[in-house]
Image (cartoon, rainbow, N blue to C red; front, side):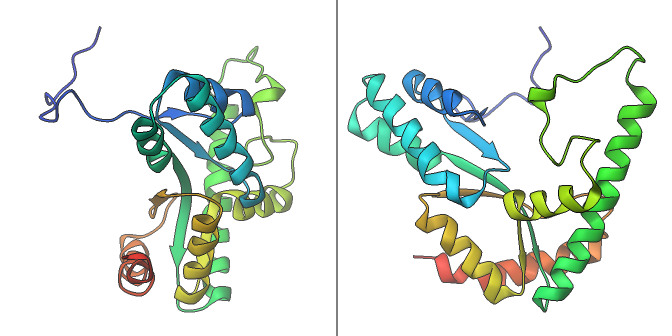
Length: 199
């Protein structure tokens, strides 16, 4: 078994999330009392998936404090990009995402063995090469991204909070984004979005 370096200071160890996406995985992780992380989950499905996790926690016999702690840790991942205007954010993020997808498809084609076949059940519109770039982009913007002006991003974060998300993992750098782009977006998020959710 590979060694973990550096040795964790936190005891009993750093928190680990299990990645979940199917309805059954939410229920099973709840039953086992495992913290969860999900991605590319449309807003309209969040309440249902969080309810499945809560039902699993109850079925697993976990006490109220444990259930509340695990529900508060249940994490949703999103790409986050904040620009001065909605149009600028969508244009810049779309270009970054499409270049990322082109690279992902190229690497898969160039380095997977010739006889390697991806199980279709493992694909979504973003990862399926049979899906057009336009459809893939619409899917990932709707289910995996928060972007826009600070006002629009605040509204999107509030919508996630209203759906039950209490732990949002924000990926602010991706693809071939420049350091300057990343910093500008992060500053806007930190200065103009986060204060709205401080309480």
